Length: 422
Image (cartoon, rainbow, N blue to C red; front, side, top):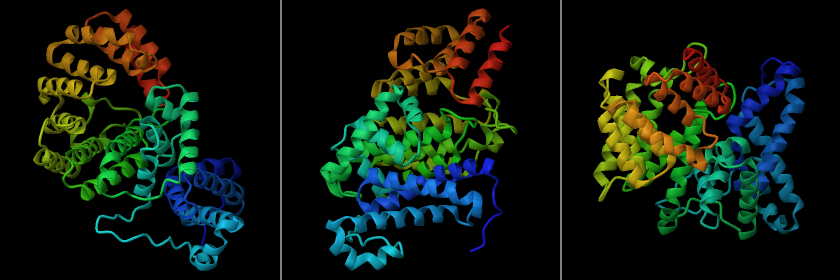
């Protein structure tokens, strides 16, 4: 196999870690099919990363680095299985297949879907785990997020998230949770958690909590792919279509959300001609399917998709129907209350009725423990104060927001907003 030019030691670590972060969900899912233990699978994937860090600087990056990492991890998995006496008989029967990295045969079912990543999601979302543990574990395994990034997504302490992940993997191992996409009622019972996980993975790609880049496109693409697969799998579930619609519409703006140097471009300044019309049409179609199968009030994802659709329907920022968006956020607050939703409602209210009424919504949110270190709270408050002419207070809020922001692009934007208020 031909290989790419040898990378220098200084650049090798970054190359390997970037590739691993993109490929790790598939590697963990593929290895879990072999060892049937997500904790062990994650460790074997890390072993493959260490092997790459040792070999690639010397031998060069393979043409297909993802396949190299997968093969290395699976070979280590096979070695581990061989060392276990209880797998001796099974190895005699399927050892050759494992050497060729051919996956185990799965039971055939008309409702089955042959996707290891979906198996990994549903396994991590098993009811034996708490709802928060399911989401944290899947973000770790599927999204490849670090513990600090997951803590940021949860607005929770890092130590709490670390303990949650360790306990979740231990619980899955000790209870023998099968590596599968469940059928019937079991699938329905786990759907809400799966949707939430996919949404959080997308959000981490759409606005990275940390690092030098605002976007992590691979996470958005993977979340969108999973949402589309679920929509095909569950055509009568309105919230599945609602989530798919939301992600399609959000992703349609990706090209316009950053400038030439990767700097964030605010919604009001985005070139809407760069919005992806195909994704917008797909989002509208998915939202129509959600509405068609909804029997009661729309769910949270369908409501958020309707908000995104309102933005997509406006050819310019000035054409946006902010009153409709504020109304939809009011419905979302009633349906799924949270301080973050209320903060977003305040932004819409500020555009529909002015910064004064919006500030009356934002100020009480300062007492919310979950928003104590959330940089968007002082950012929104700073914007409202600036529009009211209270520039000194606005500057202090933007400076506080910049101090809380962990993404370098967002921090620079907030620092620039603070300077504008001097």
